[in-house]
Length: 123
Image (cartoon, rainbow, N blue to C red; front, side):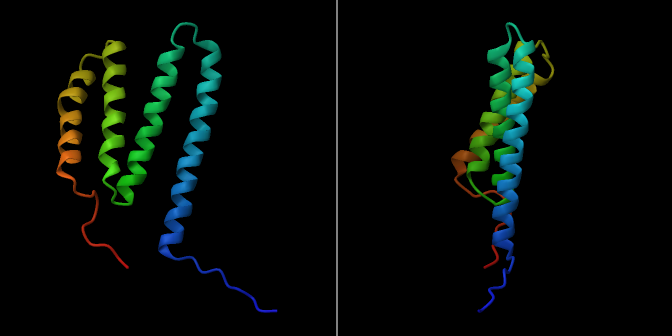
């Protein structure tokens, strides 16, 4: 019998690590949202909305680590949700800053069409 040795390359490690981060965060977000969902009487929609924003933030971070243009799209969704949540929650300092600074920056990055992260890639 021939034995196949498993060799962990950087690309393989990144795929497994990204999967671990995304699945782990999704599981934690769903569990915490389910626990808090029972206690929230009238804020259930906002709870689900903010949980979705949290997942977009993690997805944006994973995309940024891999140098993907989708970083800016997911980041725009994340900061938009955060800005709305701040304005609804009467945190008037964070909301306008997020909406007036982060959203236009993400929008201009999306329109530039350049990938995020390092410009040189290893083969």
